[in-house]
Image 1 (spheres, helix red, strand yellow):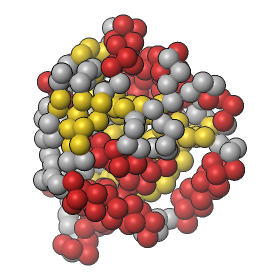
Image 2 (image 1 turned 120 degrees about the vertical axis):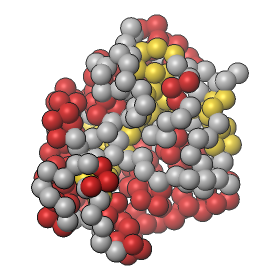
Image 3 (image 1 turned 90 degrees about the vertical axis):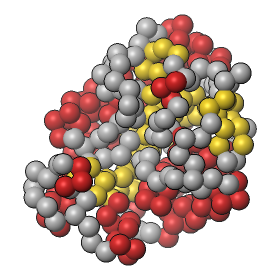
Length: 315
């Protein structure tokens, strides 16, 4: 049996069980503590009320994948909403920082090890997806050095310990929407209670990233967040899956455009009608109290996809 060992434990997040759990709890507490914008908070509060009342369901979401110090609160907030006790499988579409092939790479069997123990792969769903799609191939090696999915997994284990995992790396070069719909169709056919998660960071702005179209300093960083990030966030909220990769290519505002497009397509196929922004920040804002103002920053957004419960069917 193939078991993937952690690649970034002790670097992006803690390497021990106790420290990992403590940091997850701190991330979730920070998500409750830190306000965002009034319109975002209002939309998120209204959605949570609708979910509690049973008039809306959540099908998936978008999370960032930096070190937990930077983006753990954003990712944790989304995953806490999605990883309910009845979820059987969490599909994570990951940004492929080192993979640029023509097919998505699925980790199809075995398990993933983290400081919280081992989570099993949903091998039945993986097999069904591989049989149904020529755009996906089994490739465990592609996952070994990649952090975009790994940093989400301890949250999943903490929040829904009985769930299985299906990790799929989605390069921007593949037909991501087709991949997402195929995964959703197979999960629905099998009667899986599944949520779909897409892992991406947003604009990497500043001299460190060799991207300064609006100059170096506060004005450029404000443009990166309020204009460049928002352009792709708005596409995500409108669930325009086929527009996401072209937008990212034009404006360098998502490193995981394929993962996002696959997630949007999967959620729309399963019944989601809209995306709701829970939080939008940057590494510069998160780290300002610790390091002061910086000329470089990366954008982070947390989004969930919602729709009426009757659209879930057997999902």
